Length: 350
Ligand SMILES: [Zn+2]
Image (cartoon, rainbow, N blue to C red; front, top):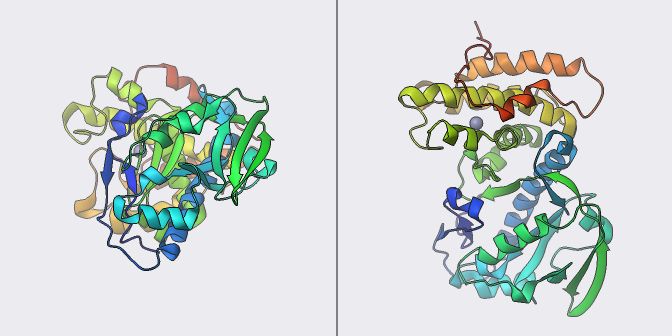
């Protein structure tokens, strides 16, 4: 499913997200349409695919993370996110009797187990009152504010939740579980990109259209590994502007080191979450020749054939271990400055 006329605001400038601020932009000016229902449901399904993969990775790998948050397994959305042309249509479709509603719940998460349902509108979660959160039409301010507040709830303690369902209040309670601190978001751009900014992983909707679940999980695991290894902070500590000039001059060695480290850790993240450890290899066998060869070759990333050789060697090691979770010794690297040595951890394809 492609998303040609979306009309939903996304977080644009990732660098601001760490401060809890999201600069709004509208991807497409959305023409009014008679029935937006099928489009809204396609977006919901895609959002939930990403949420489910992110959830599996973030919860099963909590023992590997030094920054945790309260995992609830709720995927939320706000009416604010929809541009003016789509807002009424979204209100009609999703209900939104309060400005923040449950877009969906991940399978077997605390929210699903407590009986929370799609399109429940949030009134209160623990001490957080939705009506007190400031929001502006055309922004994700309110969504980001509630995501940060929920992430900071105590882990393991029961949280009272009040929602409006079919016009009537419903009271529930769930117990958040430990999850690695990271958000996972679908970028509705139709693109084949994926990125990590330290606190969030974004994946382009083109990938969702074209790649099977295991291979998508491999892409998300690689980006998630950047966050777990604090690569953004460690690059900045080296004076390298993250995401800028990645392929030039003396910065290259630091970026390549982070890329190889993320590939190596991704194999463990996948194994711990129950995904096939060779999924990244399958991804690169397909993605490499079509999107990362010739003129598309990146200077900041190692060649895709070398990445496959490196991933295959690590998969062999992981396949020899049956216990889960595996906590790789390489995690100790995350407290050290980057030294730019990517050569000794990359295996050449020939
Ligand atoms: Zn990367």
